[in-house]
Image 1 (tube, helix red, strand yellow):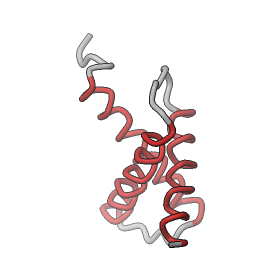
Image 2 (image 1 turned 60 degrees about the vertical axis):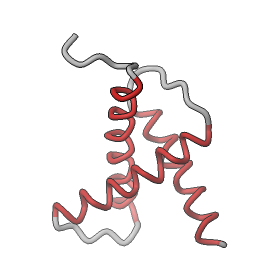
Image 3 (image 1 turned 90 degrees about the horizontal axis):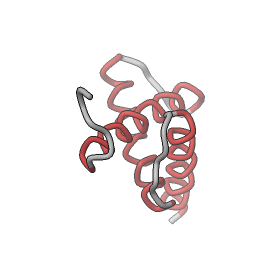
Amino acid sequence: MFALIGSLISGLIIGVLARFIKPGADSMGWIMTIVLGIVGAVVGGFLASALGLATNGGFIGLALSVVGAIIVLFIYEIVTGKRKIGK
């Protein structure tokens, strides 16, 4: 139960940080922001393992999670048609 609550809170923090750093207006609710943060953390963990970094939380884990969330946010905009490629 506490792991689920921790995942939701960290997903919200990571999603908010990613939306704050990435330029442009992102019109999504707080539930999508949590989902963005959780998926971004997974992508960030994948990036860490691909780069051979051992992140057990800490600043590096948070930074890679935010980078992963920004990547997911760009993909979300392309899929929903909010950002055009090549224009």
